Amino acid sequence: MNSWIALLKKDFLLMKNRLLVFLLLDVMAFASGWYFYLSKTNSGQQPHIDWMMNEYDFFKFIPLFITIVVHVFFIGTYILMSLNKERKQLHLWLHNPQSAYMLLGSKLVNGVIAAIMSLSLIGIFLIINFTPYFSELTYYFSDFTKLLFYLFSHLILTSLFLSVCFMFFWTVYHMFKTRIGKWSILSIIVFIFLFFWSFSRMEFTDLYAQMVLWGEYSIDIPKLVAIENFGQISFEEFGTIGYLGEDLFHTLLGIVLFVLSAWMIEKKVEV
Image (tube, rainbow, N blue to C red):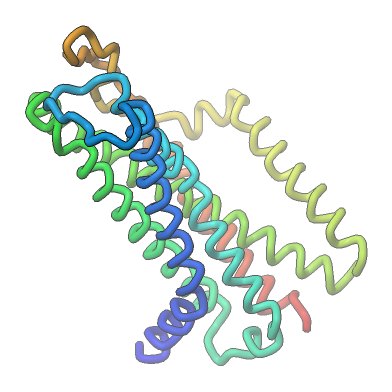
């Protein structure tokens, strides 16, 4: 256990500067939203908070929402940066007494922790922006809480799945590099294209629908329809639909790709 904690700490320290950069980008998104908002409400003057939402208030949220969407690639990008740092002394990393499962697992855990920290900071910024309008949104508070939990949890899970794919591609690339040298870059590009092409084709087959699209569930959440005169907000309900079978399929596929990545590192990737 102590060696595992030490490995987690080592990977965290390896990426601490990059994590600070990511958090700084979140702060910049928050600040840019307010900059756009103030520029639309007579730049340089103190904004008038009348506890009613108007169309200009959306400028405070747009950069944050864009940042949230980009987080789908957060863990994968974070792990690729960490692996590329290890590449500078790849022989030392590969000869670590820890197993490849532990080495890759440590980077996944650190990536998830970093993503949670970043999304938590964005969540704080969203609360700050929403604070003047809590009285208007009180009726929908439970729905918005449910929506944020659904979005943030699925965002992290999707980002985690993509990060395992990136890790798998990184491992395959290094396996190609030890065997075909200069053709490895072209080979991995073709491999990635065929991987996602095959995956997308499979999703439209009847077999996929029968084996995976089961356990349908929906979450009723409010959708903003319009901001009417005097700042009145209008909503209508709509449901977000998902499938437990599809969630399970992506989970199992992620585990398979992780195991294959660790196996290739231990058996196939040579230094």
